[in-house]
Image 1 (spheres, rainbow, N blue to C red):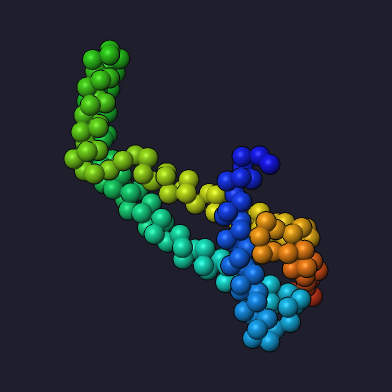
Image 2 (cartoon, rainbow, N blue to C red; image 1 turned 180 degrees about the horizontal axis):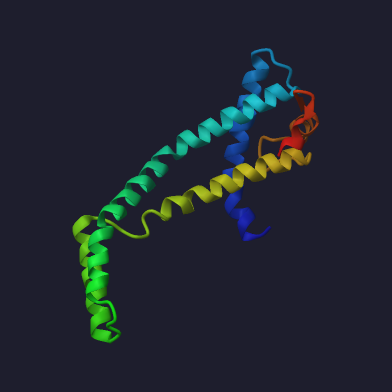
Length: 165
């Protein structure tokens, strides 16, 4: 097992749990458990839950990007002030002024990238769960071989569900 699989294991487990829970819900309501419609509705529910869970991270990323845009003119002034100066003292002064600007305004150039790094494993896990299911592979948790078979062999609007991925 590689490091990527170790990191994704708990994420995939939770994603499978949500997918299987939605599938069980639709089955409980009377939809055919092997029908493509049941799986499509389960995937839609899963995606809605994942996106809702990521809203705080997304909002934080947007706010950080806006703050960086507000600081951009001041940052440009600092860069223009030291344009063409290659000596060590000028570089240190420019760096110091830039850090002071970030501190005064409460911005951080990396803060708009960090939320993206948090979202990436979740999206990789989501893709991995759906990809494994379409290839008739059981998951790491609640996605059993029987459910994977059901997913892989289901049809939606006359087309195999797995051909849509």
